[in-house]
Length: 312
Image (tube, rainbow, N blue to C red; front, side, top):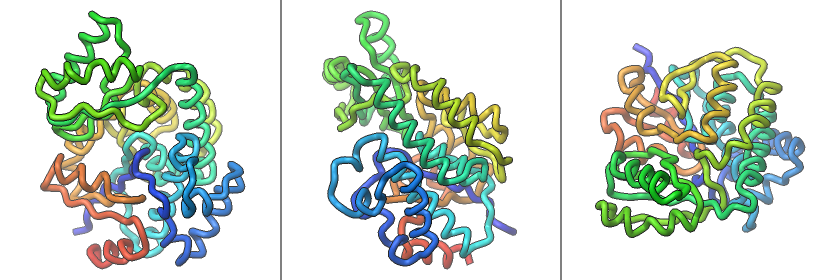
C-alpha cells in the first residue's frame, strides 16, 4: 500500500545564513532557480543566503528566501521519488509555498508574490510600533481571554496569531501593549512571555491594508489547477480552487494561523509528513502535536538522500 503523505512547508523564522547552500553547490536545477528567482525581484540570492547581512531578517527578503529554498527542496525530491502529496500545507508564508507545490502558481511568480507580501506587511506596520510575543506554558483559552480582556477593557491591540502547539502560542499587536501584558500572562500561569525580534504584527487586524493588493497579485499569478488539496491556515480545512485560495490567503493576513489544529485535522488522512525547507521547525512541532504521525525533513542534499532511502 502506498503511503499517504502530507508535504509541509515552514514560515518566517526558519531562516539562517547558509540555508540552501548544499542545494546550490550540488544541483544545476537549484542554481537555475536561484538565478531566475533573483532576476525576477532584483535580489542576489547567493549573497542574501550565504553571506552575513541584515536583509535576511527583513520581511520582504526573508519570505522569498524561505519560499525559494523550500520549493527547491521539494523539486529536488520530486526528481528522485515518484510519491505524490495527499495533502499540502504550510505555516503562514508556507501556505503560499504549498500553493506553489500544488502546481497552481509558478515558483518565480511565487517568489515575487511573497516579496510583495513582505513589503505590504512592512508598509501596513509603518508608523506603528508593531511586534509579536511568544507565550509559553499557558493553555489557549487563558491566552485568548487575556487578549480579549485587554482589547475590550483596556483598549489594547493584542490578538492570538500563531497556534503552534499545546503550551506555545504567539500573539501579535502593538509592541508596548504586548510588553505591558507580560506580567498578566505570567500571573495567569505562563512560564514565559517573550517579545520576539519582529517589526511586523502578522496574522492580526493591523495588516488589513495588505489584503486587497495581495489578493490582486495572487489572482494575476494563479493559472493552473491543484494537483492536491491545500490545508488553509485560517480554517484548518482543505481547499482546491482558485477562488478559495484568493479568499483564504488574503484572510490569512489578519486571522491566526491554526497550525496545531491543521495537524490534528489531517491525522486520519495521512500516514506521515515530509517538511521541505531550512531547519526542522515543523518536524519538531509535529512531534509535540501528534506523536503518532512521523515527520521527515529535507533541508539539504544529505537529508534528501536519507528521506529517499526511508521511503524506498
